[in-house]
Length: 267
Length: 266
Image 1: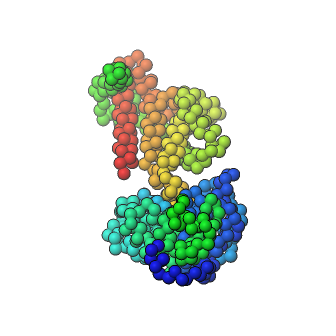
Image 2: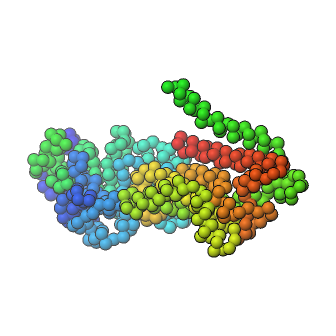
Image 3: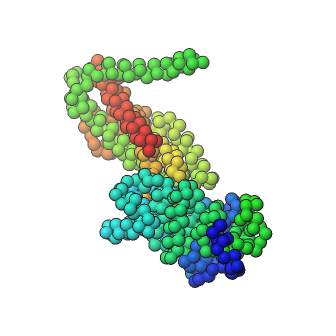
């Protein structure tokens, strides 16, 4: 954050950094039974940018993420309003196909324990019918290289997926997500359980990935949001309080609540 | 307090050791190769074995497994996936009840439903009775083992765009496999030691038979018949058969221990 503040305080572009819209939510509300977790969220998610979602625990940021690939309904949740990917309503898309396009990385690294490192990478493809061994082998190498894990694990590809360190496991999970060739990647606090060095690696990786992918990352860590994202959305009590470029958000937030939160006065 | 619990412990293990002592001391002398390979001899002749009973037990436990394992695993998967629903709770409760039903009752029910309409005792009826006995045990272990698999694996699978049924079959089930396998072993150990449901269904047979719609011998019914017979050498053979059965069940339990130990250390 310090870095950003010293950079250029004069720049007050009030708008979100735009490019082609990939995803959009309009008046999205999410429910767990009768409890409303999200209220009328309208956000445009631009391509090849990193959107960070910040806010205190329970503000609905993870729920929002899980609405984007219909994982919310897997825990019995319901939504109203619309979520679109390239203008197409995701609720009318087969969730299986949707999730191949909108991949997800979870808070806790969760490599499949019964599979080897390489099997973990290819799980999504194999279970969807890809059988070509040479192709799968290439994909393993390619995906692991993208996540910077190849040199660390190339001699132990047949070892169990959970035999490597926590940070490596998380990068393995990202590689596994990349192998399916998604267009959008959702990350739910991907580094919150990791040490600073592993966190730095994940953040570097996010910078690298946004060249090809559109990324939405939920984070508790405001420094992280400031470091990795182009745009930031601040959620509070299920509502979208402010959505602007990350620079704007951290230098001169429009709303009092945002300012209080990012300066650590609450939350 | 320690003394009391110690005494209780002794009371618990004394019968076990008595059983082991008697079966081993009385049975082991009559164990020989013939016992496993020969057929029962006619009354009055000494020697002979229980080859037909071993084959019969294997066949009926096999039929029981074919019935009990898939049904048990599938209903376990179903129950693990439906936590709160009214139907699932009822099924879970009924499974508990089924698990507690005396095995002879299962035998009688199969007798009424299968033996009477078919007009004959059969290996098939015996196997089905054993299968019904195995179902609740396998269902419960499958459900519990699947519940132990962290939900994050399921979410990871779905998040990769893997259809739900494939996620269950190829990600959740393998992760729970060792536990389910031990449940299967335990249920086989139980089935192989059952006598009551077989009396009404398989009846027993002094001759070699592997035909599914004919009465068939089994180790437990062999023990039952031979132990109440008025001939000394038959009684001795019953001890020997009991010894074989106990060793078999012990082996299954040891395998179970080894497998579970591996599950919980990794």
